[in-house]
Image 1 (cartoon, rainbow, N blue to C red):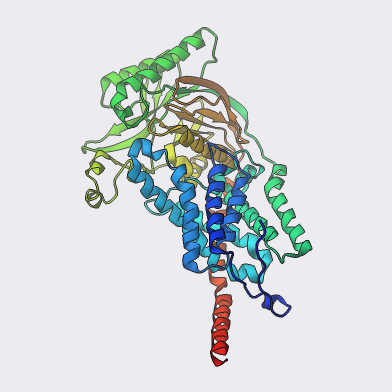
Image 2 (image 1 turned 60 degrees about the horizontal axis):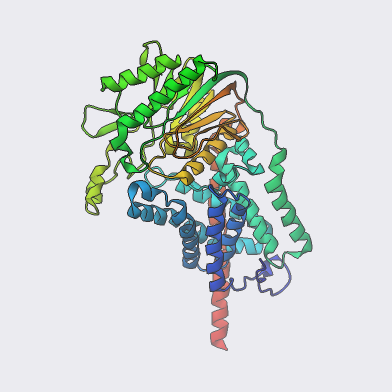
Length: 535
């Protein structure tokens, strides 16, 4: 990618007067290519090295453009990314929520494009700042997208593209925000390298910076979990049919998980499998509330008694208020022990418009189908569950995308991480995107992890982010693995929100710090107009 140089007047740093941006058709093509590159960097494609290229392409498209054009180009890149990335939402919710969600998520890349256009004078004045500016812009964009509106939707973060990259190791030092920041800085360095007028020495410096940022983290040490281990089994029972009507198949889904666990018990008795200390079922493995339904409770108890191990059951719990429910993971003890109500986690971050309906009365004006969405209540404590053989940090489904929810379980004493999920209303691409998040969390917090789904993909993840025992999609499976219980308290865990806070502070400084240069540019433009009129 070769881009035009700025127009120069007199020598010196103050004379780097901006020339025109790239031509609009070129900018549109660059923005669209940015969205394609970012999409292909994410699972199921996993071309991680395209992530910094996608960042660079968008930065090139918006550089020196007017603010509205910067927003529009960023929005275009966002649409190209999010519309296909979130296509799996149509399976459970139809096309309208898919389009609305994609449009909303694209707006955040629009803001990144606007910020890139706004800070262009800084990059023109001090070219060495370009990588750093790009990094803080992307970090700030993800900060907003991860939290707004209604608690945010962090799907498609740059950090989640890096499962097979050396940069994944950075998660142990600063979490997902640091990974995103470094990938974006590498993108800015790529752009500075491609932009003319950098000079041979500067170009060599930007090339070296890109190489160090993307390959250098491979040399960073990771302390893998070790010490004592416990044997854990994950049960992927599968469902009779994919789609939203899995709820109508509740008894069949429960039977699948019970029967698979009893079959595991037979394998243990025959010596074909190790005796597990814990069995983990996925989210919605019993959509029949076993605390209110004796038949469901008896089935789960029969499975726990057969396998001689506690089962972490994903279920829905009704309340005395019709329509109000909790999405929970509850420990079911063997030998007739039944549900251990002291070891239960209620999902803290229900999904808006899917598990509960914000502004229901207003949404009803758009479609009466909003009343199909029940009112899922959020829990009030981290998912730290003592199973006897291990203390697990439990998060449910999309919660794995949120930094603080996972970190809270580790701070609460979790020895391993468990992600209970139900992908029956989605597809394999969504499941692989979720598994990429589990890989990052394992590295981030120095804990071995697992993801267990009703239909797949399920699997175990070690402390370096490598996947073991990954299952196929839309099939029944049981996987058994020993998991180490002693992991380090990583710098990312200890530092908490501070890495992201520093990045966001840098975003604010950049957005404000460009003001003097923009005022100077406005004054020069005004003087030019005056001179032209006098002539």
